[in-house]
Image (cartoon, rainbow, N blue to C red):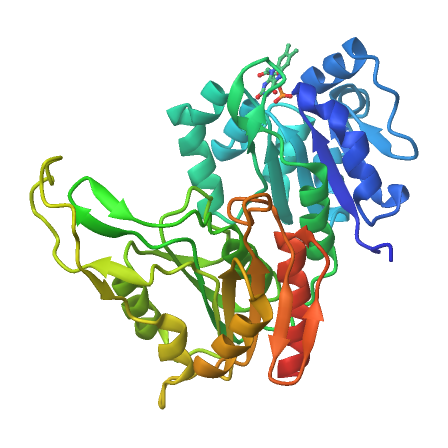
Length: 396
Ligand SMILES: Cc1cc2nc3c(=O)[nH]c(=O)nc-3n(C[C@H](O)[C@H](O)[C@H](O)COP(=O)(O)O)c2cc1C
């Protein structure tokens, strides 16, 4: 179903702009409800690449503002919109917004905006990693601007690294979720765990797993869109913490368990972290040498999901666990559901050919005490949305 929201799309000077047509087709919004500002550099790239015009979308440029001095386009466009999307976002436009520079229609409108802003950066890896770009991004994130991407991959400039614009499917999924959000979880509190834990053996080595944290981060983001007050307790992850979510960083399973119990009680807990089952019994203060004894003793780590589900005083109303299994998925998932006393369990199958870890996509086997559903493969943000719909039904 098409949204009735209005979108202000700001297109800046990156070659990734040729993908905007693909994105526009995936957004559940009528083109008539989209206004678009193209920067001067954006326009020159559009011309040099001979990209066809954006059909049915009203385009605004600096020249239009200069021609009509009586019209405050920057205020008009920002007030009309429900959401502002900068796609693609150059390092330049990010820098301008972060530093309060308003010297053309796009940057003035961004500065004048009183709406949620989503930024989809696209740039060379060195530009992305540059300390001044990172400083600009950190400042914007701290002030509630949402970033989608960039991702790692082949860049338009021929280099490889972090800086590629996020896939249009993922951006469209996230914007469509934002369009359809209803702040039905306002006043509710939720804890989400995400990422791996790491268990050190000496000052330079540790035991861990491949979890990226993406599923938990997506869940935390969607819960926050719905108005919940979210604590995201995360093991080490390269992902940017979601906006409007309170992120608490931990390293080990013990630290994660303590952080969870420090933040309980809460209305719901979702344990998406891949917690290491074991830790080394003896931590060596010195780096262990090659010719040392190779046998290590392990201790069992706290079972966070079990502790939450079985807590007499602090059990949330809804406890949701995750399981990653390589085989007998239904059998292990059902056992885990009852043993940990969680209400729902989302299991995924890990195999050599289909690693869920690090991927943007996941396919879920969903279990409750009475119900089993197999969800088709979809983006992790859409899984978060589907789970969120079930959470809304539960608390209704
Ligand atoms: C062919 C070409 C491709 C470019 N691609 C990018 C890019 O992907 N990301 C970026 O940040 N800047 C890119 N630039 C540089 C920007 O266009 C330049 O910084 C410009 O001032 C951005 O202006 P704007 O933010 O007002 O659109 C590119 C420049 C050219 C000529």
